[in-house]
Amino acid sequence: MNSDHKESRDRTIGEFVAEDYRSAQVFEDYDIDFCCGGQKTLAAACREKSLDPAVLLREIEAAKNAPGEASEDFSSMKLPALIDHIVVTHHAFLNENTGQIVAYTRKIAEVHGGRHPEVIEIAAIFDQIEADLVGHLDEEEKVLFPAINRLSEASRDETPPTAEDRAVIRDSLTVLHREHEDIGDAVHRIRSLANDYAIPEDVCNTFKVTYGKLREFEDDLHKHVHLENNILFPRAADL
Image 1 (tube, rainbow, N blue to C red):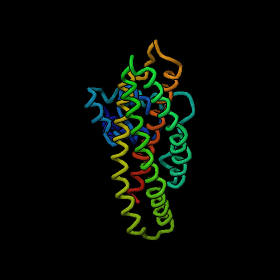
Image 2: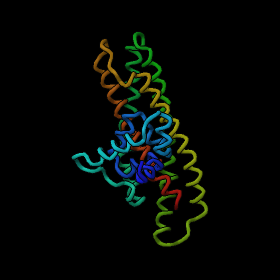
Image 3: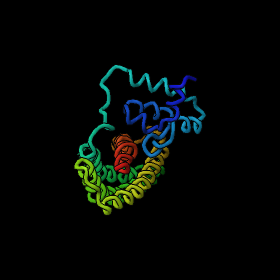
């Protein structure tokens, strides 16, 4: 293996995806977690899955060179702009969709739970996700994000950050990382119960819509947590 490939194997999953989000599809194809598990190196992730890193590197390169528009470079975005993007795009998505998904999952549990008991557990898991997200988003928008913006401004003005803001960021990052792992585990459990969102033959249209919404929720969550765990949080810690 040449030295370039050896060096690439030691990069983290999150670094690949931060560089070009199109590489995320490669990791999803091999069931490698790029958001909550983004701090693992490519070599470590491949060892766990008994995969050849050289194969993934070739596929990542192919994904980056495929025709189509390159993904936006969030890793070079200024932190206040990145925070605005997260709030306007991903927090807004959660605020607009989570309550609706709760209603859908409860409905199909009521109607189809007898023949498909897995949807009863899915509804219970998503109820907990919704409850947990309330405090999680509140912590980010009212505590962590303002502190990061203040530290970013202090860095730009070449003034020292306050001890209070440094403590807020340190403590919040610890809590939010753990909560990301918890919600990631919950979403993976839903996907497993839903058999990768395969639609049974004997269900109504609401059931199909619900599984579509759950898939959409998972896809958005992966992008959301990736931006925070692999880009925003490390750069905030560096401040």
